[in-house]
Structure formats: C-alpha cells, structure tokens
Image (cartoon, rainbow, N blue to C red; front, side, top):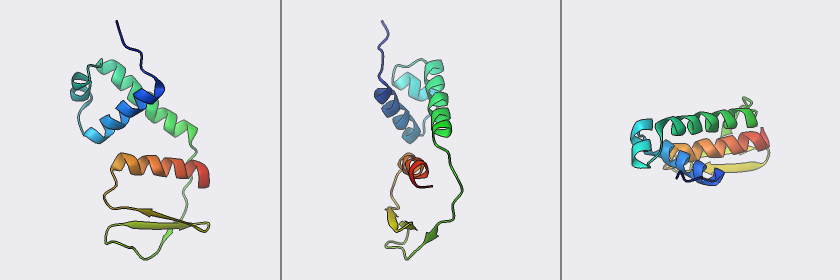
Length: 103
C-alpha cells in the first residue's frame, strides 16, 4: 500500500532533494519513491512557485558588507542581511517570499 504524503511532507522532501545535489533517480531510490512521481512533484513545485509569485525586476542597492561574503540589502527602510553560508535552496525560498511581499 502506498503512503500518502501531506503537502508539507512533499515540500520537505523536495527541499531535501534540491539540497542533496543528487539526480532524480538517486534521490528517488534512496527515499523509496517512484522516479516518475518525484519528477512530477518537482515539476509541479517549480511551476507552483513560478505561477503563484509574480516576480518583478527591482534595482537593489547594497551597503557596506559585514563579512567579506555576506550580502546586505536595503529596500523601503528594511534591511536584510544574507549570510554567506546560506544554502542555495534557502536563498531561493527567501527571495521567492520577498518577491511576493515587497516587490
């Protein structure tokens, strides 16, 4: 019998997949998933992000950086510090949320 995953559980798996750097086949095998199902989830997840968040190009001016690789962003009186060691999928999630709220 197949286990039914909640939306939250699928999103956690998809974030783990993005962070893993593994191929669809490797990740599916290690997590006992059908590769076609995983591929469908990935497509739907990326499509959902693109269609639910209208992204606009906005000029962002940076200020002095606290660490050599950290990024500091100021917009509308708000300041955001992005640490250099932030994972790529985390940065993507932050920028997606910020784009939907502020830009």
